[in-house]
Length: 117
Image (cartoon, rainbow, N blue to C red; front, side, top):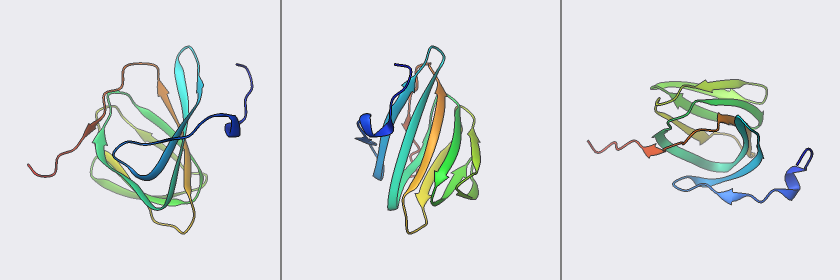
């Protein structure tokens, strides 16, 4: 596959997230490009991954936390999340929050952070 359109890639709900879908747009030899769409009121709980994330915000607004530090992000912002660092997302706008996320093609173990101790 050299060229495709996002409308031709099925969106799947993100487990453990609210009102959020993922599309795997492209899986190259070294990296995978994913598109996330988070509806208003949607979010992802605090979690860790065993791979780094490089992200580009396409539209909308969200509050995210990376290693306990909160950021308000919007279209045009870029985000780096190192491997193993706790992070979460919350759509704080009235429209979909949409971003691209590029990750290396390594095994990615996702762990929800247990706040209960």
